[in-house]
Image (cartoon, rainbow, N blue to C red; front, side):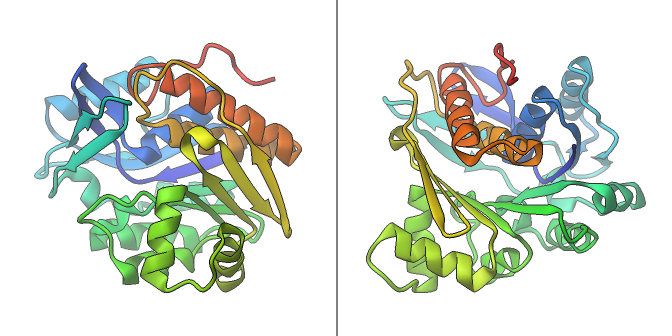
Length: 289
């Protein structure tokens, strides 16, 4: 399976030290671990942090073919503070390399043959990267999974931008907090989660909606059916990147033709493992069958 992930690669500045991060990069890294042929379209600065990022990926056998070098803007960084229960608070630095991603001819060719194209809402905070996303998604085949992972990070949340991204996709991934925010932002009618989900699916012609609920597990909505899975209990180190790992496992499962219940269960297991480790991109010690 071929998967294109578009958006930020950066350094998470955690209390325990620097870790590779960025939702699209985390997603791509885990998809590679699960056996997919993956390309990450991103951009780093011509600086020590950028060179270290590229070396990290190459050391793991992860393709850097589509990671661009910006001669002016620095490599992205995010300062992360953790609450007592491991929940992150993000300070995302602006005017960095991944704000300037370009849809190169090589990226377009990969998009045209990809089985899935993934991007998050944060990467669209800058018009240049947003235009690159729009161009590449427009190249996707009719059967291609086009996945939007909502990652609301204030102050980079814009109603018009979110609306335009929803029009591009057929799979939406969000968590329960993000669902609450989008319901308020769009004035979604109803009083229950199922009503909100049905409105999103019908309004934006979604094939699948993935709702992660932290310690309460996940709810998958597809073809008018709901599939629920409880979370796995682990000792939490931090929750950074758990949702990205969940999405990676779920998309790989979808492309592999797994049953929804099996895919949901496996994705919860992977997310729980990531929560038991420091940082967003631990090596997965129990690869899927």
